[in-house]
Length: 465
Ligand code: UD1
Ligand code: CA
Image (cartoon, rainbow, N blue to C red):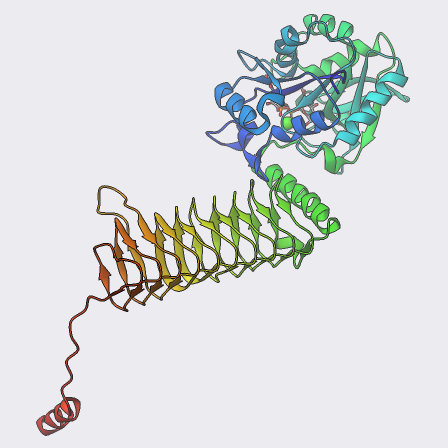
């Protein structure tokens, strides 16, 4: 789709109303920075090229966009100072000279905008015949938005809230901040704008009055919900709720059971296979993939983690940058830290923590264990309370456990150390040296039994009373 309309997305503002050290457009929303949402909508509508205008924390915004979109992402232009939305569009001009078709202009803080609305806007621009088209919405509460001023049907100008008269403030038709402009008109008109308003900024909205002098400015109306701009954190939360519902709805239609969609958080781009059941209160964060026929238990959190087909992750597990194979059973209350890789059919029970550890097919660690920097073979049984002592206060060391080994309960494996295949480690053993294949290792003091000792003690104590 190399011939789509060019698009400019404005991402240079500070976002004062967020009351944040971080630029507004970088605030995360369902696993993406805020400004990635309108850019994704423009991409989906076939826009090319797309120019993101950055300014405040421009390096961080550019880096976030590159991380999000890679080489197919937007070109970057810099607005040196935040002189207003019109000035920001001007900053994109060098990147867009020569673009023939209409230029779409979007704001980086309208995450709910859809590609379908952009397509309707482009149709309206083409049929309208004027130099400019825009998206409007009827706002139940229009405060904070620019108002559309009409003479009869004809759109004549936009007035910003701060510059409204009492009567204009009562207008409920608002500017969504999405435009399609003829490039010839756009680049000339931008040069003629003045910052004569309450904010002393160059307002993009002033283009409307200029365009109206030349021809009809067409508008397409959209749902106000889709137009919501994020100016403060209440807006961010409200948009988050809508995006969450959209994502969850798509998963439901794709055959995923969400027992309580209201409490389920699935971030953008997460893949979930059909017939998977997601219990209440689950978070599937960006970069996660869950195979078909799996079950994710109540309160579980997956961060950039994969869960294979038919695997059950029981309640309150936390998985970070980990991969769990098919038909495993994990938890409840298991914690898989980064670099945990489980083969098929592995069982990890309650209060088991793993880190940078590979566990082979069918192995089990069912209770209260820590496995860090370990390579565990297939068919291994790790008893309750087994700890890999992988850290000596300065460096980390590996533990290897061979196929079919049996690790008794309450065992410490002091790394670096190797347990050979099929070896037995007796309960309560502290392993400090390598154990050969098929061996038994035990290290504990010999048991002492004193017959009748407890009875004698009871009688002694009774005599003292
Ligand atoms: C803007 C519109 C308003 C519309 C509303 C819709 C103007 C003057 N007003 O108001 O009519 O109803 O959006 O949400 O356009 N930005 C820059 N550089 C700047 C200033 C802003 O890149 O110098 C970017 C911001 O990062 C933001 C976007 O432009 O993503 C909009 O700016 P913002 O200050 O939020 O405009 P609003 O007051 O919401
Ligand atoms: Ca805004």
